[in-house]
Amino acid sequence: MSGSSAKPEIHQFPCLKDNYGVLIRDPSTGVVAAIDAPNGDEVAAALKAKGWKLTHILTTHRHGDHTDGNLPLKAATGCTIIGPKGEADLVPGIDKAVGEGDTFMLGSLEVRVFDTPGHTKGHVTYWIPAAEVAFAGDTLFPMGCGRVFEGNMEQMWNSLAKLAKLPPQTVVYCGHEYTQANAKFSLTIEPENEALQTRAREVDAKRARGETTVPTRIDIELATNPFLRPQSPAIRKRFGLETAPDWQVFAEVRERKNKA
Ligand code: ZN
Ligand code: FE
Image (cartoon, rainbow, N blue to C red):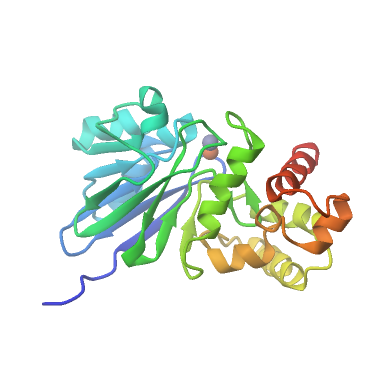
């Protein structure tokens, strides 16, 4: 066949307590990557269920619930591990370190790398433009964002602002199922947001049926995620931060979530 290559196949599965593992397969080359490896056995089981052979692991950040499977999977498959330059020394089994502006090929798919520090100092996001998909690890969650452990609030805001500028139809995978708690919190920040009210109801219904709420999409987050909405007049007025820079409004949302 000539012309555009086929879209990748993506398989998401629950791991550990509330993590997600993701496998992505390029059908034109058979290359298969795990986006993070929360647990070697669970990733191996997902590969077996699909009948796929692991060739790569793309690590978003160093935390154990994203990297504990790296060494066992590498030992079992000989896969190549790609991970963040900014914390490469803390990523088990890393073969290739990548950072802001880097691109690499995953089979026939071009992957672009953003530094998205804040949750950890070297956290990266992987974007595959041709597939309109991004893997944001613990940076962006549905109606939420990662805890700011190693960076500062301004840094985390800058990371989220990069993701906010991706094409609106970009599908975003993330590391955890935290959506229902995030929705409940988000309604305390912007209760008048009708898109948020509707989404919160949909999320409750999905969780009641035991369904996943991940992945999400950039346009949906822009409309409903208070961490991406520091420009919202209602949020600014509520905080008394009408003229503050965006990152300070973001920081107030994050502080309130920390205390919630
Ligand atoms: Zn983490
Ligand atoms: Fe995590």
